[in-house]
Image 1 (tube, rainbow, N blue to C red):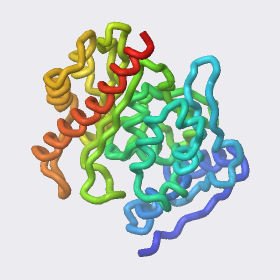
Image 2 (tube, rainbow, N blue to C red):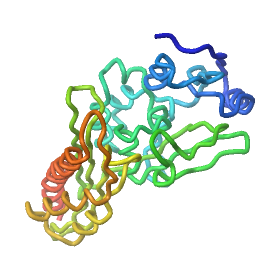
Image 3 (cartoon, one colour):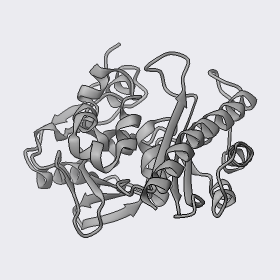
Image 4 (cartoon, rainbow, N blue to C red):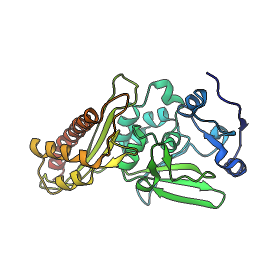
Amino acid sequence: MKPPPFAYVAPGSLAEALEALSRYGSDAKVLAGGQSLVPLLNFRLARPAALVDLNGVAGLDGLGRDPGTGELAVGAMMRQSDAERSPLVRDECPLLVAALKCIGHRAIRNRGTIGGSLAHADPAAELPLLLVLLDGRVRVAGRRGERWISAGDFFLSYLTTALEPDEILVEARFSSLRDTRTAWGFEEFSRRAGDFALAAAGAIVRMDDADTIRDAAIAVAGGGPTPVRARDAERALAGQRASDGLIGDAAHLAISACDVDGDMHASAEYRRALIEVVVERALRRACGPAAANASRSA
């Protein structure tokens, strides 16, 4: 398959990239790693008038820790494999490393970018799930200036975000997980290694000094047109001691946060069952270490 014809723009600065987007408007597509966009072009599911290639734009692949907020700041053009191998990412947010390892195959992660995956907004993808789970946010730039968008406001629907046609995602922020009383779990199910997940879940549990769950965060991918937070399940865990029954009840409750549809890969009933399984497994991974860490720190 070959893509339809398009104009190719290779800006050398963010200002040049924004000017090109302003010129072509909604007829332009931004090219980052290309691991999602290029297949769409080759299947002619996307027919942009122009591609604006960000690979020559300096300064979009930075990585650091914001000393004011404690957030992990990741440039949009950072390759997924670079983030996966980064000591800073491992120390600040090991959950992100675990999720990155599940994205496609090594060759895909070598080209795929953090910002590209977030902007593509596939509801089964790992990075959108992590941004929602970690109460993350993104910084976007346009000809009118910059703005921050929270994860809850960024993902609107299937492959749809709050980005305007003349805006570019330039940075993502993820909450740190350095607190010793905090533990996490990540679980996904796919038919083959490297396939898109049929269902995925992440869980974060924070314990108090009495080994009780102070608060929890649970997010699900594959349960609707966007990744979702299972707020009712989170509230059910708060103030409780972890137990098999509590975790099972919370996993079942998480299904109510999802708007599950069937497709060629899985029926709605099967996907709901998978969601309950991956949430339960993620919670079990989180609750054991969190309780142990709380006991050691008391």
